[in-house]
Image (cartoon, rainbow, N blue to C red; front, side, top):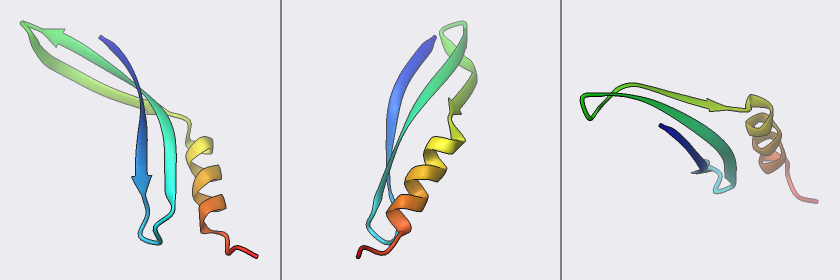
Length: 56
């Protein structure tokens, strides 16, 4: 099974990071046998750095 989603994370400083993920589920006998998540680290880093900058 292939699942696309966007995770919304609120950091301690109150700023938010929104990162697209892809989940791959391998099913066996109707149950999840393996679960893998993939995302672009640069997308996370860019948003995390931008949300940590002081305004001004």
